[in-house]
Image (cartoon, helix red, strand yellow):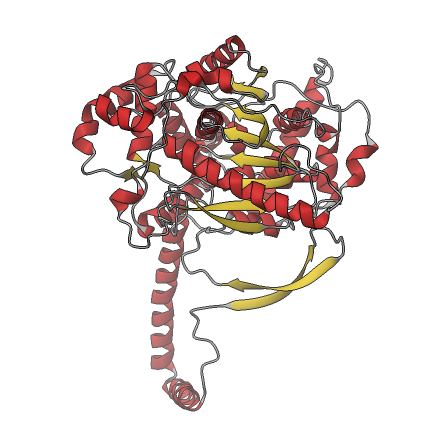
Length: 589
């Protein structure tokens, strides 16, 4: 026992903390005044200073010399320790163990209080009767000032405006939360850090209501669309705070930032308020790529076109009706859905509105995976016909159990031995992937009110792709069903249609990623290269969730350097029809 921490706790904690995972440090050789034309972001100047050099124009990726590496690593460890201390100091949520501890203390204190008052009444009966009569009279004649159920306190705070640097005062009310859980939304995180926020509700062609969130720069002619992966939400792009989050990094570089959210929330947002659970969850990755993303990107197009015409009427149309450049940054399942979107839009001879794709560990190919995933794949394909009538989706079903998970996540964080054990077990389940699984469980998008779930057919679609060793659309199980949807007896093989991709693509893989291994990302790269796509490939020493849930400035610098390659004066290539894929039809739901 040293400093109040047992040696076992300390050992487990050290084992669970991953070592420095940076692969290349990106820094700028010189400052560029062109980047200062945008209004300063609403965060503190000191927090900006730490990341300013990483995002300047024309940044390169020089190798770090050996005599500099130890200093850089020590600085990163110091910053990580500082963030950890600040988080532990400001986060006052309680876990299950703390709740039990507190309840036991209150119970013991109540017992001793009763014993103390009983002894006082026996030893001083006159004084006790006097206090009792005074309490009764004040209780009957007075009024309750507060029933104790809700505690409110209002404070005046200042927030920087979107374009006006002058602070604007507002009143913030804090409510007492008896269950002491974290139910913050992406909006809460963005506004708490002083950034502007806008929520846009998008309705897909099949009636699903999606939340498209935005950190707006209304007069910007460059925009970025961020799309999350499986069991995730827009929270993943902002959860690392001001310096470590892709959404804030893009906004600070002058981009109009849009955060997409796929269908698949427990709250089941749909135009049909009476939709059944089975009807709501009946979708595959097809619908993510052919319904969700098209609806959100078309909404972005409508909003940006209208705003730019109003704010900058002197602009001339660059091509058709698009006054702006839109890039997409996607992670995991979001990357697979985005590739599906681009290919199917080209097949349908519709504009995809995009100028560049940055895909972080994209899904699609899964043949090279660990033993656990292979066993799950075979079991799922065998049991799918049996489970399909009974299982619609995978999520935590009740508010109580979602609250319990939220509190357990606090225990995993507060007790290193417990958290390290859970981290180790989860890493083994996913084949040794060293992502911060415990930290992800503590994110507020897994809260008692709502959480992202996984459709049964999305899981089945992933199993089909792994089993077939191809990146293909959903197989409906029979030649006739596939013929009705695709115009052929087999679902469309997207990997064979990469020649339709007419924009640059940047693929990023993680050497420690055991969920989507680098060999599978390289398969995307090989097929694209053979198809004539303008594609690049890079690897970092990351695990699967590190791309969004960990703070890596070198990754943010790389992503921003790829986005800056977009020429805002160049006209995108025109769409052409695909004679080899004319049989593709969108399913009419």
